[in-house]
Image 1 (spheres, rainbow, N blue to C red):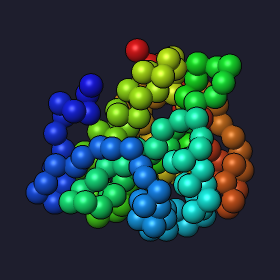
Image 2 (image 1 turned 90 degrees about the horizontal axis):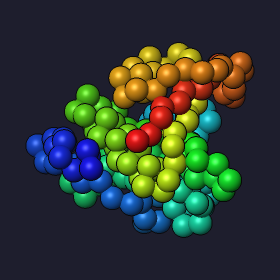
Image 3 (image 1 turned 180 degrees about the vertical axis):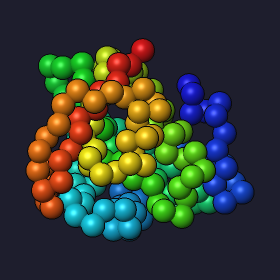
Length: 161
């Protein structure tokens, strides 16, 4: 698995990737607040994703505290996974945490039998678009006025092995 052989340093310590737990929710909400001015996941959204949803929620753990997270949903009747939320604490950006976490989420989706991963990203989020395109995602559509502030979303997809 790519994320286990690609070490990432996070404040001089390796980031560990693990499934999110309900006890992580306060830290995940704090990351949401720092990363997104609108369209945030709520405590209820995180609780459902972690405890009940068909999918995976992974956390990049740096020194015992979540520094990033990703939420992927698996839907019955389709071989598509959907990355529904992905964020990295600003203090941990630029260290490879996002790249490593995204690879782990893709591996989890492929292990579940998914053949592709899809996501939506704000049209003005150049850093996220750069991450996704460097990882092999390609734009296949646009949703106009997708976000609360009427910003359009690019729809991206990547085939999985």
